[in-house]
Length: 108
Image (cartoon, rainbow, N blue to C red; front, side, top):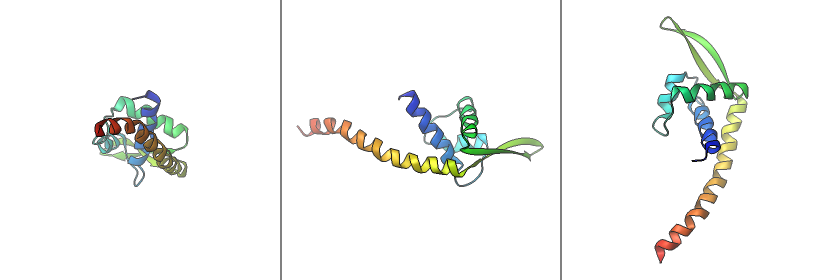
């Protein structure tokens, strides 16, 4: 898969993971894992990039005697998810066009 496309998908997956409630790194990885493979070394740069773009905010809170960073989606982050949904309709259309050739060959 194209690196830029995968990067964009990962960004939106991270935003979707925190859309309904604040979460922390390990939980985000667990939530995304059933859909795509993501490691800590991939996740944390994404979180920093999303924070810099004001798509999420971060706060620290104590948990079992340690500080844990919790991530919260911003209105801009929610808007990015909505943009992605609109973009995805176009991507599906392109996919159907590309796959059309395979489907036509199966009919012959």
